[in-house]
Figure 1 (cartoon, rainbow over the protein chains, first blue to last red):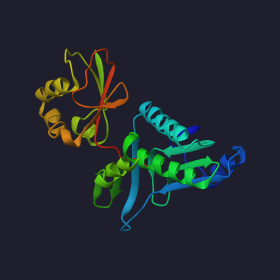
Figure 2 (cartoon, each protein chain N blue to C red):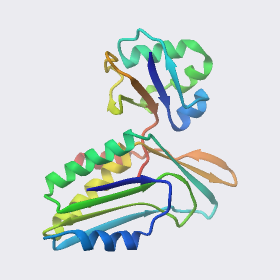
Figure 3 (cartoon, helix red, strand yellow):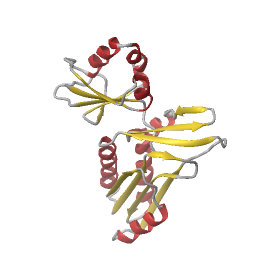
Figure 4 (cartoon, helix red, strand yellow):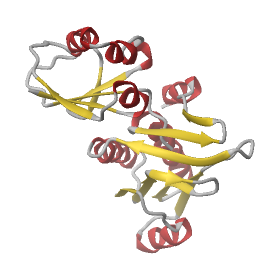
Length: 146
Length: 82
């Protein structure tokens, strides 16, 4: 398990290659990257706040659960905080397992839980001002399928 | 003494990221009542508890959670990671 919470940008392609190179006995690797969206072309900045200490603990707990439930060979979670702009990669997850179904499901599980159980908050700044992104009911509802 | 932390718009409404508080509150809900009585900015931050989440010693919990032995309580809006 490799969990990183950082303000520095990272190269998702290089991370995925390094992850794939170090896993053993897995025939499937799935990855997901979250990218800062600029829906109407007005976003000038996205600030991600987090709760140092709890963030790492919460992600580790979620990743350990996924690893046990889907018998993952390994998993990777990188999540940024601080100031980002449209097009920046916010976070990525990668999962490795014997067969692809487990890797896909575990990646979805990780994403669903990271969205509403890891202590991150997004604030979007546009030329009209700054607003905190509200949590969506669908994100909370998504947890019920697991 | 207990460390109370605020994040996102809760931090902005209260005007500080953390403070140490001398309290006899038995539960999170009791602590919230104490804070609300302090000043209007706390009343504003804690006006609607349904819009808030709480963690005691970095574990998510309910407002009914006990503060016995707790070192750190954090208040924040629903999380928006990923």
